[in-house]
Image (cartoon, rainbow, N blue to C red; front, side, top):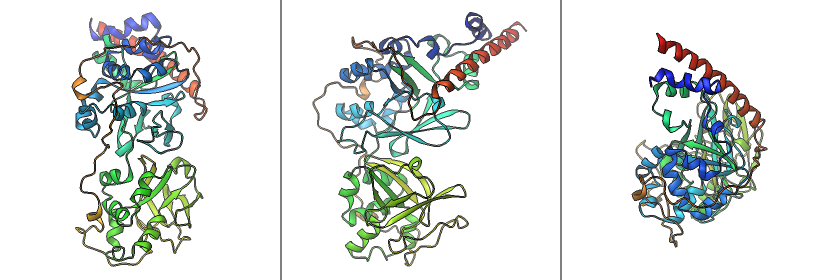
Length: 442
């Protein structure tokens, strides 16, 4: 069939191109996965962990972030590669749990500000965040939904298309023009298709090299704070960039360990709530481990902690979050305030700057930092790099029996937004179909 005839044919049948969510909203999880060939690798992975799969099949309100087949092809080139290659089932299990969110989170429920949703990853061997490790979600320009995870990884929601039309250039054009509804419905919730695996957040010491924060990592090791910052639950850490350490020269390196600890502890907040940016409104007062307070200021479209500008927000850790700041915080100057007119405030702690090539404390950072600890486990299911490409197999017998679907209470009018988007898409599909029909006759 000529490409220009695909959409008109569908438009005549339903006055618009129905999304897969519309076509399959009555299917149970097994039926939904079996009918989407682009999720065949994910299906193989999921069904190899029978307990998780069976639990999902009986859920009545859950969101699954399902990596498509292309995402599986990226595994060998990511930090997940070694765990999959070695069939480390407990690590892979934690990765799978990290892709499952309690509650219904449609694309339209996200906006331009990050929200952080808990996941099924609660195993304390891999996370120490109360209520479960989180994934960040935001909707960027063009209604593109992005999820952020450990090591700064980003995953993009992609629009699912039925297999028969996946290669149609006209349908691809339609997808580009209608990016509103990107979830597949099943009786227990929804499935979002993503293009890259989420990576469970790692420890502070494992994460800082990824963002060129080697001085901070080395200083924490030198001050004997690594165990605390790595294992204590629900931490928020404000991390000075390497340039901030260089600006103080040898001052910090020459400090007695107790004094260095005091300064570093002023950058660490231990509270009942992790300080994600969404939890830090203007004027927030935070109590640090050193005992003094920090003040959060939002001004001139920038976030500040005391006088330091936050230059990178919400880098997820296994036990909380870290924010990168451009300057040191001084426990002897807790009343220091933001000056948004300055690109970078002058250091409050005095020192002589070092050469750009000299980064203090870096030598204390472990020379071998792996992304995932080697987990010893008795496999209850295995899925390795060698399994990629084998497609769907071993479907469980569990089927979804729940018929109700709950809308997450933390997102406003999500159901209405999705329903409105569906209506718009139906009309758009019909109009585009008519246009393509006309072009096809010319």
